[in-house]
Image (cartoon, rainbow, N blue to C red; front, side, top):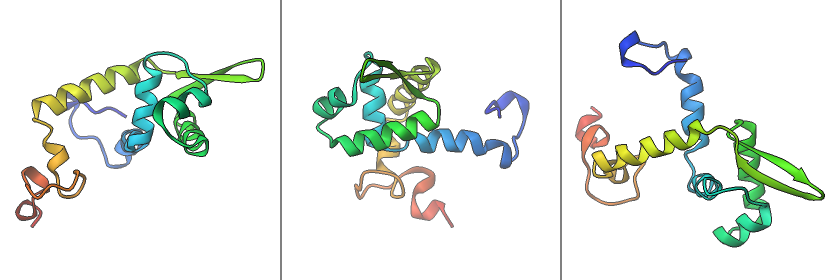
Length: 130
């Protein structure tokens, strides 16, 4: 799979892995876990305390991130320390921050995926969907 404007169109089937990657990150809880792990390893108990989430919620989202091989863990005695398994994930998140800044966070205003404001702009605006 390649998302590269220089090599032409990629088939829809070829874009499925990229869509799955973005879907795996399309949850505020998972993003908060990744953001925390970007600062260093953490145990589930650390994540629950720092993020104010239930243990079952953190464990469920860590399982998702591990299933996508974005996060992994190392065992030390009876404890598991979670960490970012692929440093490129941090590059992707930095790029996303730059994109959000460049678009003045317009995606947050999107009526389909945004945060619920009444201002509509861009391709997600109702008149653009016709």
